[in-house]
Length: 284
Image (cartoon, rainbow, N blue to C red; front, side, top):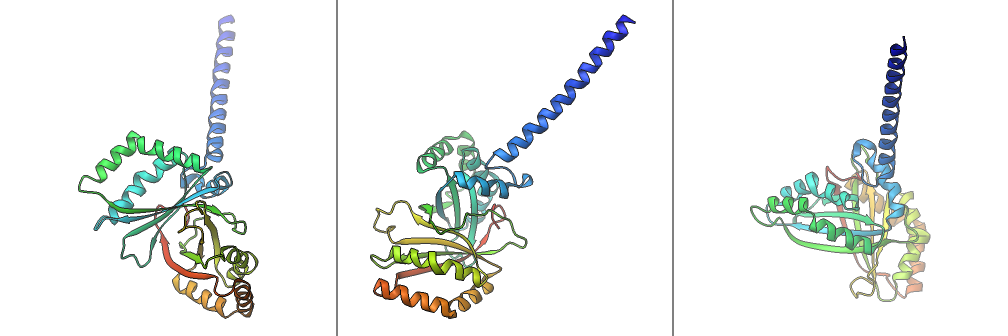
């Protein structure tokens, strides 16, 4: 009887321990899913990463020009390895796109970090990672796959909405627009966007994704620059929205008033690139 009693206690203790372990494991799994800025899409990475962007206010837009015939190889490297290794080193994958008209074989992508210093540390660790070095070596067995890289260090403007990393179905068409202001008019341009343009874009069916200005504004080529991204149902919808926007009397009046204040046009150059998200992009 005594032996039976101790056996009962042992089995009860064992069962209780298993239950506690299971509960702890579940709890830890939930903590990791909600606490990590870079989880897989199966755990709702879009929502988690969007929340994490409030803690990662420093952005970097990178434009890669694939070597001739290597665009598919470059996409495969991002899809299978690079994005994952970026996340491993604390970088937030925001979005990856390719221009609809893409004669230069470009991939445009945006990352986010806590600061410029954190960005530099992440890239240093990424470049030194043996896993990445092996991936890069294997992908370049038949030659370099990247011909050129452009980098823009960015911060959100005060009128930008919080960037939402959402996957829509079907995927949206995005538009990257880069403005260069006339000398002395960059703040007037920001004022026009802040007070009028952003709201009018929404009025005419465009989704404001984010508005950025370069952080290295001491450089002559960056001091008068504004970069922003819109989302549309498709390219035709984007063009129709802009046609309606330009004809809107509210916009016509706002533009006229801003140009009187600025002494003429507020921009010297406007570039528009319609893009589609890649299949591995967190935002679609």
